[in-house]
Image (cartoon, rainbow, N blue to C red):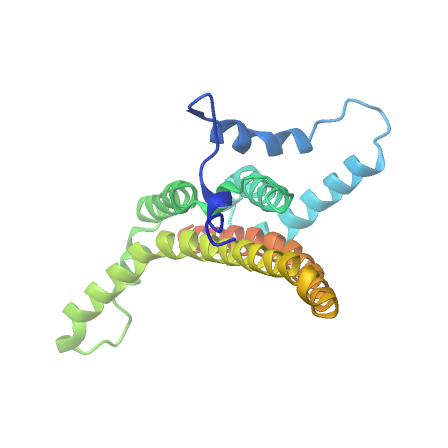
Length: 226
């Protein structure tokens, strides 16, 4: 059990070639476009969900910020579907890789910050120095605010990676313990199996919540810079 603890986090390969790109592209199949005059329930639910996300996240934005609507909605649907697919047995979850999460967080954060410096230069620079700061604390506060600005994409990526990885490790450990206890103590194995079921339900919720949190923070960074 200990030897295979991190096996699900290893990038899968086929014939010596990594297939992570194929896995990343797979969730797009779950959201097909409909050409019917009358849509089915699945497509109607997908439409309703997209409208709800747009209403919740883009209402506070300026017209410049709303140009990011398609990107933010696509980001949330991609992360959410990838997290959910990763809960299936013998699957690989790309969002457990810090490198992938950084590759999503850094460009989005950088785009929002560059937009802020381009359209709201004075307001963006004002964040580095709060009003009424004593003269002696000015250099220290500028350094602290600069560090906090550059930590934002790292915090986004680490939060998503840590939450998804921790949940998968817990499910793996409790599942392995349940298999071992089946031959030793069936009543205890039943209890651990119930815990595993409850944890699985919780992980479904965490998968969607983390997608929402990641996208919401990107939306807030965008709002601060537009």
